[in-house]
Amino acid sequence: MNKLEIIELSKIDTFTNHPFLVNNDDSLNELAQSIKENGLLNPLIVRKKDNDRYAMVSGNRRKFNC
Image 1 (cartoon, rainbow, N blue to C red):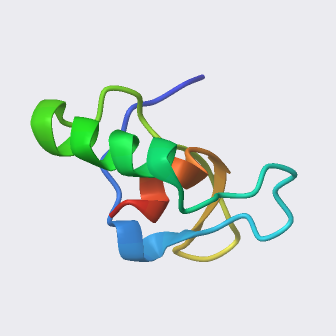
Image 2 (cartoon, rainbow, N blue to C red):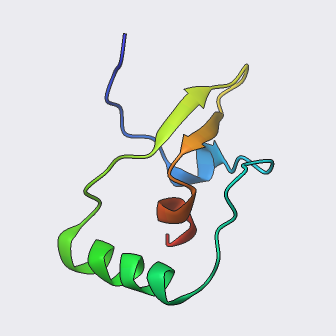
């Protein structure tokens, strides 16, 4: 079951072997500006790890901007 929950960013570990690299380029700057102006429109997707931490599944670029 999918559940919407607010999680502190400090508890989310970046998926280091993610196949899509985050490039610090113009499109990332545009994303950052959009988040500043409009807020976060698409949530990050994470999965619970064994402890009180979460693993990033989707949203690496959005988290990179925080």
